[in-house]
Length: 273
Image (cartoon, rainbow, N blue to C red):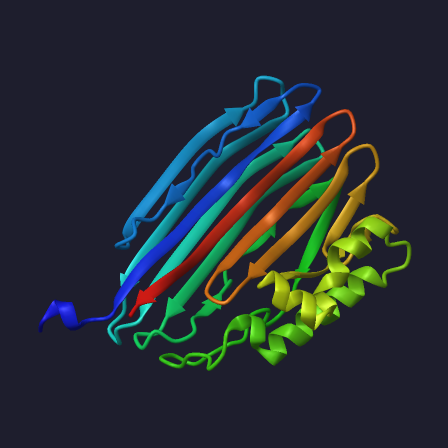
């Protein structure tokens, strides 16, 4: 077969198990240990880091690793599998977990149409926040399911079932009793069709609720810990051809100020023509 007649796919995926920075008590970078980035032509890449402890005791983990596969299926579709894992996590003795897993699979059809995605395999093991063990309840069918060799006829950000769930989740967060104004501002925009179109993406979460969290401290998938900051669980950002999953994102704003992400898997790609 003349290869020049084939449709071309440009792979794009990365995995970042952990990373971030602190601005207080001093400027400090937390390097992206165990990260991977896939070659444009696909293939396989992996990375691993073991037994890290920040010199200032801000962050530690036992293992951080990632793995990405980019391949062509028997039907001619392009599949990207992205995995990002942190084990033995400890952030300031406030956020701990035995294991955090971000698993993302995205498949693009051979005809250049809209991709489908799955987050099956993502989750938390023995997550504790401020000394309390919590159990994030993952939603079922966060992303629309499709049968083998079947693909959506529209972009994920235009899928009615997906949008209905994202909007309902946004309303749950913004209407929660005691929800602070900043949180309402952060999440209310998802409810606006015009704003969604202007931004070009939709934000939601894998987490519907958090069992075991202290009363009045959580709003949907968001936890607020006094004298520490805000914790966002299972954030999923989607656009026409891209999906980004971050299992834990921290916004710290007290004695220790900064941001961190734990368990991020990101995938998109484009075809030509």
